[in-house]
Image (tube, rainbow, N blue to C red; front, side, top):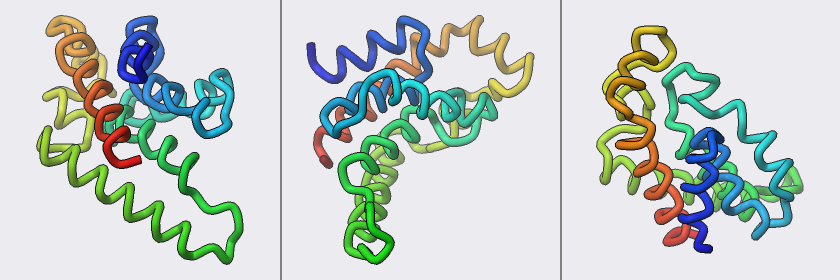
Length: 144
């Protein structure tokens, strides 16, 4: 199974976009799946269903941190490399989709009951969010 297939499968099972992306990469960088699912949960729905930063993006940030994040405070090179990779990811994702915020990507605010209803009626999780999960994984595979 490819990472993309794994991430989409997790998303379709009901895990958030952040969980799907982070968990698809976690094992490659020494983090077990259950822990990856737990630590990435708060970022789903645009950070705790606030419709802010897309969860597929924040899940990607976690994967980038797992691979490149610093483990010593004095390791400025690792910090700078991590930031540069995150910035590159944001640039590429924005070039593809025009936005990074969930509410802008979906065209509704899933942080409100009305926005949740609209997202359900338009089946946005299937018609848009799956694409964001796929693209986040593809971009990570290119960048990492």
